[in-house]
Image (cartoon, rainbow, N blue to C red; front, side, top):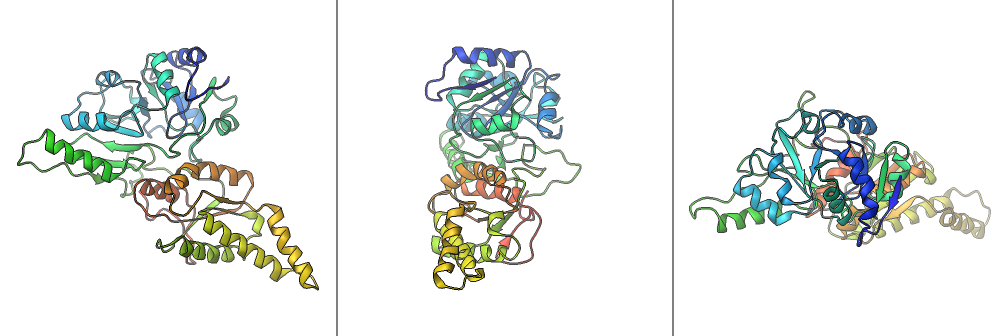
Length: 403
């Protein structure tokens, strides 16, 4: 059943049926502020394999457990350190998952066989209401089929999962568009295992605040490290989702253009050069672009110039008609906004991947963004989505810089 609800004022009565389904161990697609999740009762180990089956997800990839309130967390974990409690109360509810030692209430099917569990408290009103009504913690990976781009809106969920789950709850477009930050708090030194909207600087600022308010004056503030920069061994269990397997990938090959971050014009120039190189391999209709508005304009100009140069028209007017035809075709060139709007790029990335797959492009060109704030998470997802390595500059593809 497909339910479309107002995220600002969700109809609680409409959520009673999917909440009951969750209690019974059935699957429910639910919106969150990050991406849509595929939820199941986190306390029913026998129900969890259905999540892995529907997603086609490896069973050693742990699931994140979603709760409605702080009071729901202590029964699910062995302990919560003062630092963990301090950080959780600064960022929850919101796009943060914390890794803590799990209690016996959490089945190994949820934790991927690990002794730890990821806990998250979503801020999306529908997710909160649904979990509250269900009365159970909800284990929920992203709702997409494993390896594909995450789902960030209801219609895409319906297209991918219709007939595969009992309920799909549409709560509008996800605010963030990328998965939550995953923070390992099993020790006194926090480690970010997956970057998200809440970045290293934000967590470090809270750790510094913790030192000033809680710790002895002679102690140093906990230092936040990045735990996602190391590639896992084939036989190593991932401590958090997104650490081991290829993720977030469209069907098309993704190529990331290296560019000088100084100005949008320099990025546009680099994208235009990369687009021209791609035109030697594919027709314009098979080259997708997701980029800043300036870069999309550059690619469109290259496409038009190429059309004029290859036109067999005998007159200048006929060649101009060939250029005009390029614009009328509606090439698969998608702009997220101005170059500096990294939040807009993050919000639109997965939706763009799916839109370009529907256009059946063979390759998707995009460009790097500065790794400030959510930029680190954006580049993490982009690199995981990138396909085989390319030899020709200025294009970078592949996972050799990726955990």
